[in-house]
Image 1: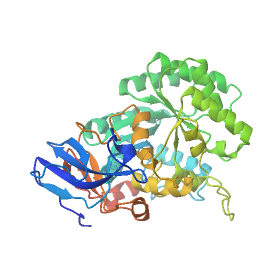
Image 2: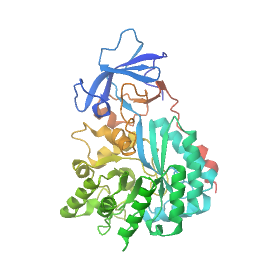
Image 3: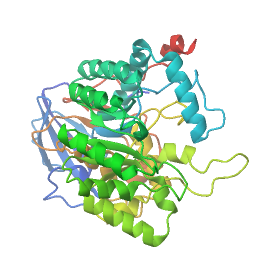
Image 4: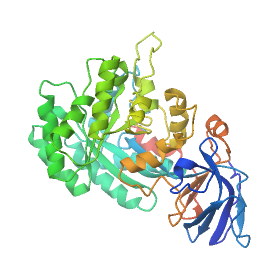
Length: 436
């Protein structure tokens, strides 16, 4: 698809009459907002944002691209993905779309196929897609059952170096915490220190859950590692580890960052349990990422029966309590989610519908830009700031209804003041991996 506009071929130029989500401006003072949007001229100088000025006030001597009120966003942060298992669908499908079907078939494919070359090729494909869509910061969870952790973290470190300057990458070790008292866990912590990773894991309602959480928090604290956990990804009301995680953080005096993903069963609790748990999460300073597309796909799926609930966490209630909340892609074309393309625009469009994040939409842009960047410790990302890099995404849409009604396939992604090649990788590139 042809670009909707041509950028000036000059070291300095202006994007005039641009519409910017107010929440994405590092400094919004002096701008009058309507529906959380402001009109501005953006001056780009030598690949950086030279100035952000009221619309119509950029120096007339500068070459300019008239945005005609089209939206300009910062590049996106996709803070919860699984690029190590992405794009195996054609090789190993989920026969019934259930959570157990996903677990069993990913395990089978991992054991049969996940060599360094296989993981690298699928990671590369995923990152090409994410980059073309406008992502600048991405965190992936990595299946870390032995011996896969050694293979996949080596591949990840190579990818992080290869993609430096295009997508900044972070990685989290994903394992079941029933292994936390085994020698494997000490080896995993050493691996994470050597690869600058994060401690992850899947929490379960085990009899000694508190002891396991204490071990996790103590190991992370002793080694200066942040934590990002898969939590309560179930419709089962009896499974609620979220509050226990918050208590463990407080009990252990842990000072690092703790992120919890999914938290689906929170939406299945009574009001008293809900309030108590959310208050604990806020007190402990946990951050919550919701994965609306994957959770809609997996949760409340029963053969021959229409789902009765949406599968997502209590996003609005958590945000109202002061908890940092964001959304992300999660799985992509694997047994946990058969679809997706690591496109944060698709994620936010679906999140608005599924979580009803509209009426108003004023701050909604934060959930794939500013807030996830803050959660990942990269506060300079997710905002448009004078002096910052001209890493921008330009849309033909002018207002929220236009933005949310179409996939914005004609967007322009600008890195360091220049438009990039937005060609998406062809799925045929993966064909040699599928013939196994």
